[in-house]
Image (cartoon, rainbow, N blue to C red; front, side):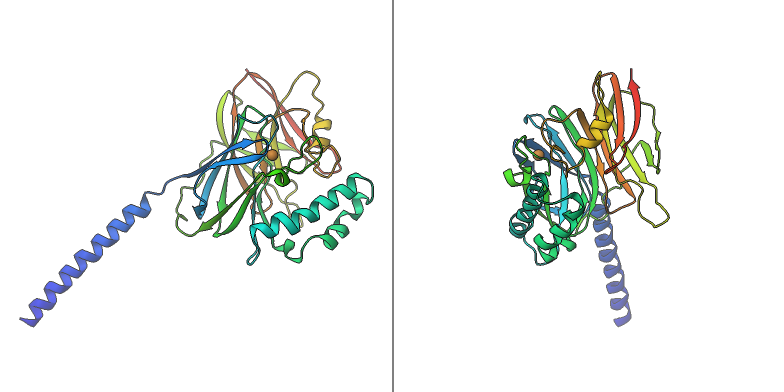
Length: 308
Ligand SMILES: [Cu+2]
């Protein structure tokens, strides 16, 4: 009798355990893409998302339909114990000072790194820039998919106004928290691959109008670092000077990343953490375009193409 009871108990326990397993499988199996919609304003982010996001792959869509200036999405993870306020005050005031001194000729470019060491708080080294740029001109929308670990983050825009004020200081920042939960989000599934070599942008894609998702492979040099960590899509006009575009992409330059831009930007990436970056662009008009890799204090890399 006792054995029969034990047998029944075993069967019931097995059924319940299987049911729980199945249900949890259903819940977690239904991995959903997490997308955060961001509308850019001059100068604020209007974000349609909760301040608490699940960790894993997240797509940030930067829509620049309402603003008159170009904007970007940068994401930075704060070191433990550092608050959003610390970043927006101590750290940003340090950067503003360095930028002003450099632009006024008080310090040389070669002195910037020493001066930032003096001015920026000690915890600055612990900041983790997950992505930067992905520049979107007015009327454009840029998408970037990144893997976020649990932590405290800030969404920021480092571009500068016509007067040289960093957009973050004008209010382009949005604080959020990432906690565990969605590590099984689907991996990005891009249609095409772009590989950045030392002297070449290799594009495995037939240019056509529409929305296109790309994976960017960052080829490594012998020291294990990437040759290049950025890629941008621009729309060419008669007389566009790509060397001028490369100069403009230099944040440290007096006119660098400052309104107005010399050309229209349709999205892209700066990737400092991973070997592969994911982004999407939307090509609405036929015309001439170029992939641009910004090279600091050098000649940029370009690949021009035409969309019929
Ligand atoms: Cu901005």
